[in-house]
Every structure is written in structure tokens, then in C-alpha cells.
Image (cartoon, rainbow, N blue to C red; front, side, top):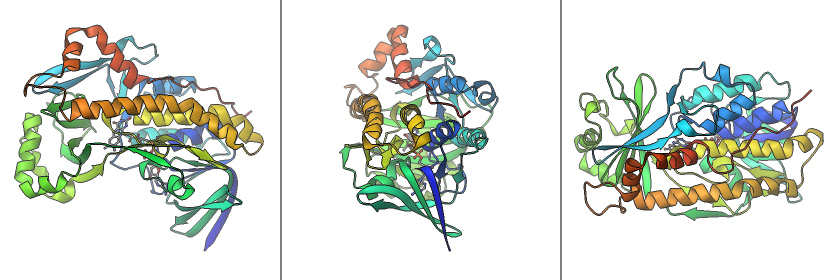
Length: 405
Ligand SMILES: Cc1cc2nc3c(=O)[nH]c(=O)nc-3n(C[C@H](O)[C@H](O)[C@H](O)COP(=O)(O)OP(=O)(O)OC[C@H]3O[C@@H](n4cnc5c(N)ncnc54)[C@H](O)[C@@H]3O)c2cc1C
């Protein structure tokens, strides 16, 4: 059975970029649909950070008070444990934003919140279990998408397709957009270990001799991200599970009484880390935003913020025109022009951090702190710089798109 739908804008992917763009376009009265391949937002492979700049947007949208009623943790200072030494890395308390903290909240709660508010707008549609498999192209213009659903095929025709389908984007691949890859020397292993009441507070991460363990507090358990050299998972498997468990404990000793929960490799998922960027983020009828236009590394925990900023710029620049009809490729290029340099800057910093900090080349002596971290330890005022980079980012966007009357 096949279903056909006609709308003004179809957004592929219900992640931070897609849901924020969907919310803002629907708020502006643009007829639109978000197609998400999963049945819900409950997936593990997501960061949990809601940045001060995103919280500022929530305030501008009048949603902040309600948003902060959701269970979350407010982190005003990020600390890292580097070769056994605690180093304060970022101090958010002097940011020029209403909320001077990062809110840690499971991303599915954030996306459910956005979706429940977006559903109040009559032009909003979220179609879950709708996996886009192809673009519809006529006379070189993208005119819609084809998706697989449990009920059969779905064809959506639209004046604009927004690719917000993340770092394995089918949209950018089918559109033939040229992509530049930046070498990344790391991958991440992703797993859960249960949490106890007297565990230490969440920190930025545990660094040791070029290795890194990140623990995200998800209430009843720690979501663990263990950074490994790219392609190194097979070697880790060959050394065996007990050795791997020891590695984890050597970073966070308080996990030693439960690290054996990781008793099967199926509980440990490999996430490949990439940094790449499209040369052109758009063509006639199509725009890519978020990781679909520029895949981000987890370093710095800034990819979600950047994806949301792209969505806000998209709505600011396109909503008014989309309300009355199609947008030209020149309109779409304005989104890239606005968002490209912040993306370049952040990706450049991520590549630098991969090379100098995460892979440990910055420090000569085994137990010494990299010079940059020593500076942060000695001069507290310098911690405002990483706070600005992580919490707000370059060129923060503000809500300017119209609101439907
Ligand atoms: C291991 C890891 C940890 C990270 N941790 C953090 C962090 O703590 N903080 C941070 O800011 N960033 C983090 N990042 C980066 C961050 O995850 C991304 O930059 C961010 O999620 C990008 O948002 P997005 O909306 O563009 O894409 P995504 O979040 O990837 O969302 C894409 C959505 O599209 C859907 N989709 C995909 N294909 C299709 C299709 N064909 N049809 C329909 N739907 C589709 C997916 O199901 C998904 O819901 C991390 C990245 C990795 C790899």
C-alpha cells in the first residue's frame, strides 16, 4: 500500500536539528512534516547536553520555566580528571546568558518536550517509523522523498526537503553533495554501568595517558563512553573482557564493584566518530543542516548545540518565505553562509583537540598535565573561554522567525 502526502516542507530526521526546525517552522505556520525512522526518541547514542545558548532560546520561545521542570542536572563548572588530577575546565557562571549552566537531560526527554509543544501547532506533523530511502528529483530539482513505513510506502512531495538525518545521512548521499572528511584518530565504545547513590558527581571525563572515559549520569545508570584509537576495537576484544573491565576501573575506581555487568561484548557498542562537512549544504529544493551537513565529534559536547543553531538560522532565514511558497537555492545558500564559519571554527578546534589532547601528544611526561590544562588550573579566569566555546559557541542564533497568527 502506498500513501501520498503534499506539504510545504518535509524534514528528514527527528534529532535536535530536525525537531527544532520542525517546531520553529510549525510555529511560523509553515505546513510541514518531520519523518523519523525510529518509533520514538528513546535511543542510546545521543549526547545529553542542553547548552546555555539552547536554554536562552527556550526562554525566547517562552518555554524555559516549563522546560526546567523536567528532571535534569545543572552543571556550572565542568571538571576533568586528568592522569589522576582534578582539573576545572570550564566555568559557566559568568556567561552572558540567562542560565549559567549546562543542563544534563536525556536527549529523549528534550525531544519529547519539543515534540509535545510542536504538536500544538496545526501545521506540525511528526511521522515516526518512516525511514526515508530516496529523494524524488524532477528536472534536477528535489521535489520530495520516498519513505518506508510499517504500513507500506510513503511519498511526500514538498517545496523544500530539509536533511536533518545525522551523520549517516541518506539525504546528502542521494543528493550527490560533495563531502570533505577530516581524519579522526578515535572511535567510542558506548555502554551502561549501574549507578549508586554515593557515586561521585558527573564530571567532564577521566583522561589518562591519551585515553578518555566519559560518564553521563542517566539517573539509574551511567552511560559510559570510552574513547579508543580508531580501528582499535578488535585488539581490545582480543585482549579479552576482564582486561577491558580493568581498563574501565583504572579510570574510575568506584566502578570496580559492578564493572562485571559488562560480561558480554554485545553490551558494548562501537560508535565510529567522524568529522566531515559538505562543500554545498544545498541544491534546488534541498537543504542539509546539523550533522547531515557537518558531522561532529563528541569532543567538547557541542554537536547538539550546533545542530540547534542551524535549525534556528534556517527558520529565521526561510520561514517567512516558506509560508507563502517555495524558496530559491539562493535563499538556501544564506543558511550555509550564516552557519558555515561557526562550524569550521568548531570542527577545527575538535581536530586540534583530537590531535593534541585526546591522543595525548601534548604532554611529554606520562603523569604531567597538558600545558593548556595547567593554564586552566592556574588561572581560573581562563575557564571562561572553554565555557563560552562549549556553552554558547561562535555566532549564537536568536529566535527571529515569525509566529503564526
Ligand atoms: C558517541 C557520541 C557522543 C556524543 N555526545 C555529544 C554530547 O554529549 N553533546 C553534544 O552536543 N554532542 C554530542 N555528540 C554529537 C551529537 O550527537 C551530534 O552532533 C548531534 O546529535 C547532531 O544532531 P542532528 O539532529 O543533526 O543529528 P542526529 O542527532 O543524528 O539525529 C538524526 C535523526 O535522524 C534520524 N534518521 C536518520 N536517518 C533517517 C532516515 N533515513 N529517515 C528518517 N529518519 C532518519 C535518526 O534516527 C535521528 O533521530 C556525540 C556524538 C557521538 C558520536
